[in-house]
Length: 247
Image (cartoon, rainbow, N blue to C red; front, side, top):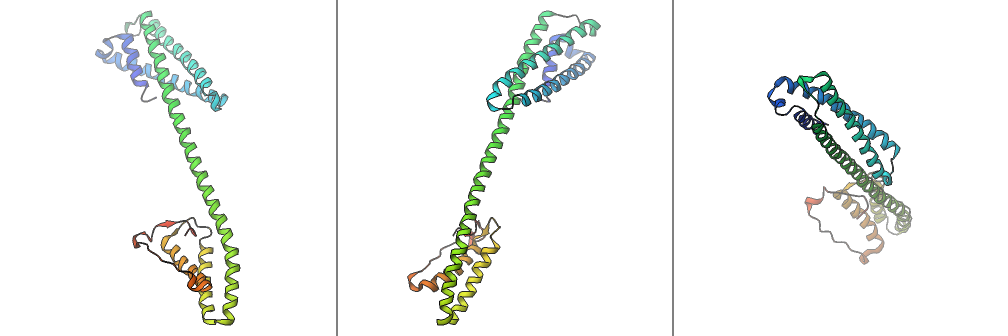
């Protein structure tokens, strides 16, 4: 409304009064104020019509029908408003104005083009907003799907890992108590990490690597020389965030 209405008011009054419109301050101020008031009412009325048709035809496949009917209603409201302005100015002799039907026709053409422009801008903004919402929803669904997969992974890791760890611990207690104590300490670190990050979406790479070290120690205890691990990570990346248990 702020962008479109002032230029329309200037064009309309110039067509009504000619060059005198810009040379006479009283005509400029009064006619511009009156015309803008009418145009604002027209814009508000068109907004109400738009809301009615949007509720009446909300589906995507009804878009062109809604736009067509809305545009027709806008043009009817515009024609009625312009006609009122011309007839009232002529009736009261507003600054000596006398109606000119040729000018009236030109103003109607300008009004129709303005309606088409305004409708295009509004519908374009509406389509962009709907598209943006759809993109956001798709991104959120993608994130929720990945989170669901991660939670499923966590659910699989915990029971199987616990069962295997307890079996290893049971065999170590009788044969190598010191290793059993160290194994139990690393096992507690692993489960502390699992429990602490069960509800968190992200963990630092440093914490994830501490978990890996404890986890690897337990596996190393079980498999001995059959398992080895080499780590090459630049320290600048240790504060980066990753989903827990991905490594």
